[in-house]
Length: 358
Image (cartoon, rainbow, N blue to C red; front, side, top):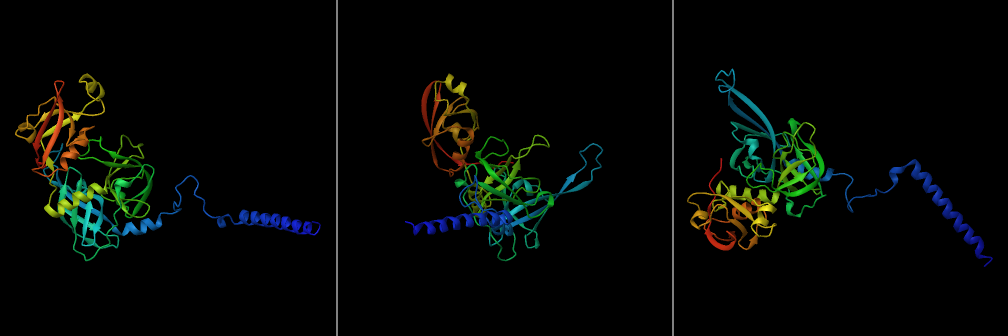
């Protein structure tokens, strides 16, 4: 035991000396410490440069010119004026297909693209879908760097996302934020709304640009920002890529999007109205209008009917009903369950093609 004592003293002194030396080194060179991810997800990168390097070559700037008449304005002379706007687009196919927002190219007399490598081209407008605010462009410049797709259905509130675009003409601008909400459909901007809400800054010129995840994969198309005054910040919206992909494929295949339609115009049923009718306050939509000569009218549906389910799926909102019907093909059978005058009923309709909307 006596012989072990000097050894133990030596070991303790060595440990103390080592800790003191390490403390001095860290004090002088703190960058030598490993990066700790305090409060974040395991493996969360300290930089998103790799994700931007993957996605940014696929984001193009869009410049449009529109001729507007001054004849109807006070003091107008009947002359025309050229309005120039900026936006963004995303290369989604090496063959030269790009997706952008419909409102970026709507009524444009001239559309120009500037790719990330500096090349400029005049694209062909393949088709548009005003009801989801999407447009498909095509350029013939040889193989292009298509962005890899992610899955918007896998997004969770709190996930980090990056917006890449051309705000105010400042090309290749990247902003960072988190997913604040998914499935937003109460804005009244579009017929079919299913927005990703994010606090990544989206400004004028970002429209049509890429919303990506931390792997550099496309999860949304930046579309809108909620502004009530100049001080409003942190509420921006993107179209989910899982929705956009279906729209793009339809435009490629048919030049337009073919959707199901039954001729209903419903409104959401509030809890008081549901309780007064003796039905579950969490389920049901109220029919406020039936289009003449539509499948709904031919099936005998009436204004004031409450629809509880479509093809066996409980309906909780107007937007949900519109999306379910829109996914149908013309000639599909549709079964609806509802309530009229306190009595349950079922009807079967044959879906038609949704008429084009302005």
